[in-house]
Amino acid sequence: MSSTATDPIEILKRRFGYNSFRSTQQKIIDRTLAGGNSLVIMPTGGGKSLCFQIPALVYAQEHANKSASERAACSPPLTLVLSPLIALMKDQVDALQAKGIEATFVNSSLDRDERNRRYRQIAAGQYSLLYVTPERFRKEEFVAVLHAREIKLLAVDEAHCISEWGHDFRPDYTRVGEFRRELGNPTTIALTATATPDVQSDILRQLGIAAFGEATELCQLFHEGIQRPNLSLQVREVWGLDEKVGVVDETLKRWGNASGIVYFTLIRTLEEMSERLFKQGIEHVCYHGDLARNDRRRVQDGFMRGRNPLVLATNAFGMGIDKEDIRFVLHAEVPGSMESYYQEIGRSGRDGLPSECILMYDQRDLNTQVEFMRWSNPDADFYERTYDLLLHDTDAVRSFGLEWLRERLCDRQKRDRRLETVLAMLQRYGVIEDELDLTNVRVDGPLPDPLSDNQQRAAKLLRDQKKLYALVEYSKAEDPREFIHSYFSAATERLP
Image (cartoon, rainbow, N blue to C red; front, top):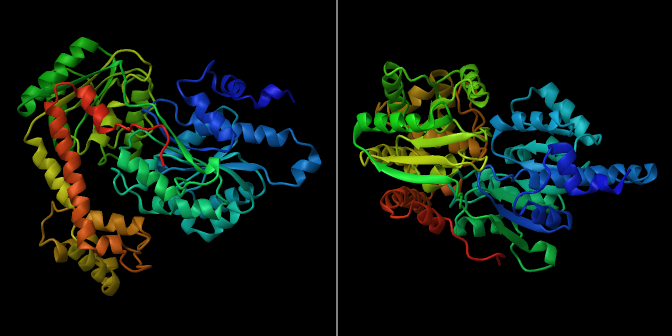
């Protein structure tokens, strides 16, 4: 086998069809292959995945180049990718397999037989890349499978989920440092598009790679910044739906049939805008969480293939949208945080060509976000009352479901969504298994301290309020680009 078969640039050309690396990709890959840990902050669409996929293929080829006796003496190396997004794993793995790359995923979308089949294949040495959620480590049989392989590289995607200061905290991500130790402290690369300095420090602390020690245990920061010079960033103050429709109409006149997304917070507002646009003869499709899964898939496929260039969507639309030629992203309502806003505008202009991002700022929309904030931040008393009902009235909960619980907790307020937040968090912490229809709900542990401590709940609410206020400040900034840079700024190249 030619030595060039393990050369990252040759793998890039042969497997991925690119002639050169972007920006810091080569440096990140070289450091990874040398056994160094990295924290990578790279804009959406900047090519983060290649930073761990290329090393995974190098490791696999190096193993294949060994003699038969050498291969028999050690297990094939495996790159373990932690991702919070079950919805994306199949698409990511399908794309890799289409390139002839041995990759797979294991998650709750698989039935038991298929899951066990993949466990056997992994333990037997198949696959060089394995995608899982951190929650998979709750399963002893999964951990046993990993011990049959050499985990050469641990890639932590969407690493901001580790931090309670982040905008999409996942409790099981806080155990990644524990998982890493159990796997023998493999080389680790943490990747995200959005992380303030506080979040960066928290990521490294949780991973256990910020302490002084051997050079490879120090973590180098690769921060590509948030500057996307091809994006035109604008804030338009508007009042009501009429002016919002006007902004959409103006944008379509500038861009014609180019691909674009208009984001909404509320499905109701989305549907009102949709009705207005159809009356004006403007063709479009809609995407939101109330659509059936097949309808969502149909809309997404039509957008990706260019059949439906204009999509009105809630923030449910975006995961897996790897489309290079999105020319505009409009926000018809104020999102909940700068992090969310930056991720969403990052879907435009990935081909490097001019693109437009407009935030329509109607101060009244803040009321919606304040209400959402209340729903997403129940106090400790609400958590304790919900937990008590689940624990002591389990049969009634199983029989009568969500609305029975809501009547006892929310005084019959149908619009109150605190209960959904509590059930989702209990599921994330592993306290309950089934938070959807509750017909098989079971309490598997105590109420976690972070959910029963009012000081921690109040601190979380305050952080969310600051994130929303940052968007208010952004709307008034003379230079939106400079404001975003300051918000996400990080001054150092190496974190202590």
